[in-house]
Length: 82
Length: 424
Figure 1 (cartoon, rainbow over the protein chains, first blue to last red):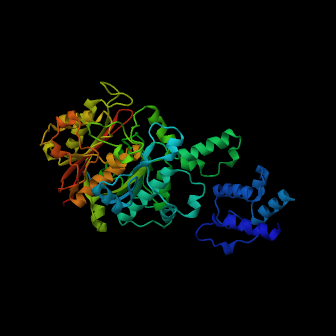
Figure 2: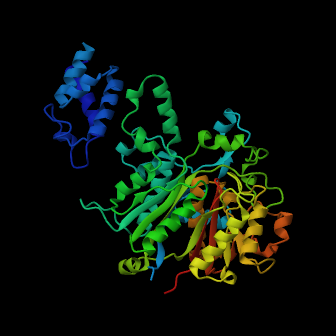
Figure 3: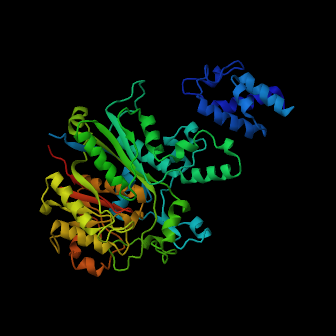
């Protein structure tokens, strides 16, 4: 799976959690989940579970703490899959 | 001087119909919502039939955003949000999308137990040492007040947002709690109602108590037989009913349509004394509840035109009729009209009081008393007190002025509310 494909899958996961006033086009690799995309911390918990299911990986507590931006998430996924 | 309180919105998600129009038609025509339930057979229940609202993905998607549906596994929340949203819109109220909550609007929406299927899912994950996989909504779906929390958030209510729970009295009790809050000037509008989950984990305990009918698995529509000679237990049901109660002043100011006035009522308990127990009512308390409901509403016993009973189709139906007759001091052809919607709905438990109150109030608008089903042969003890003409077996044309609605619940708890056709 290429990084690009992973990014597409991740964006699909994020999409459903975006508040009404944030469009999917606004999501970039640099986006901060909570501060920029206005995703609340409870939903971040669910994004982690969706990521686990989509990539068949397991995220530990420290991974979750580090997962601040979309790029962080991609990095974590890359590390788990490599 | 207490504020007058009126009903300006109704919503319902019932076993025999979803939405007001379909529900009105179903009650009028005696359409049953009781069906065979394959899951109950698979699980070897004695009673393999139930009254469950027939939801589809299409209906659900009209009330919930995709995000709200993520991991949602609580049928009571589906029913409650559907009924609540319909009542809110029916009252002509807008969804508050300001940043400021509507301080005058509140929610009192009850349940017996919420999110049972979600709780089961969670128990399995926890037992598998997988608590980390519960997700963010396990708590929200299983806390009793989950239903009022969902509704309060959707509408942006800033007054009291709470959930009451008193077994099968819940829905009727909620109407009186909303009435009190508006009458005393603490709120202008309250969305009140109740919901009850579907499924074997809710209904199993009742099957174990052997109070559900077991001989109608092949003829489900005939199973629920309130007031009949061969009533053999209540059919388990589920769903939600919702009513918007509002101060008359606010309703007039908004130019809202008014279904009926809530004159007041009474809630009490028999204290599980004098024949009352965890599962049976103390008749003295039931009679006192009805009498005080009338007193509080300043209505004479002779003024009651119609009763919508609790009448679950168990051996207790004749006792309930005796209590109405004693409390109102009326019998024979002088007894008010009386009906039970449980013949069509089954017993929707915590949701019964609100679903049946919605039906009761619709009778004012339709100028009809909806008929009883499965009651061709009236129970002897009931027939001895009530003339058959007062137990309509078909919907009849009649404009009631005063209708009494009562619900009774496990724990020996009672509620009786008095509705009046609206006039200024």
